[in-house]
Image 1 (spheres, rainbow, N blue to C red):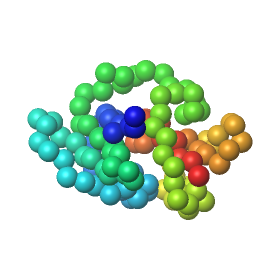
Image 2 (image 1 turned 180 degrees about the vertical axis):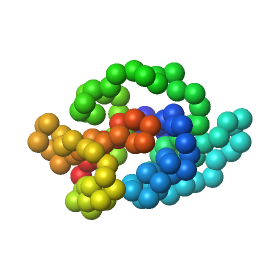
Image 3 (image 1 turned 180 degrees about the horizontal axis):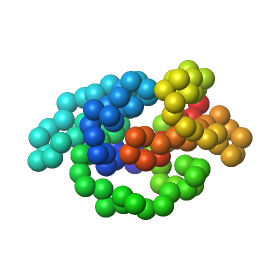
Length: 118
């Protein structure tokens, strides 16, 4: 088995695009009409991230301060130092992995936790 895609709920597509494209460097791919707005991003190996512009049933729920102890999407990056620098330059708060490995946890503009690892 492999993960085909991860779906994340967002509130504003352009704000989300600024994060996923501008900071993380992901590339948008074609998305069919599904009856609601969203954006799709292609990853290596045919995997995808699907951003869905829908009402969030989890709005207002408390989240862990450290994203590694929350539902999260983990992605391996080619250059950990570069992505860490881009997050810092954009003012995105993150925490380093408590395991000591080269990984960090941040949240997208809608509070979805993203793990980035070397």
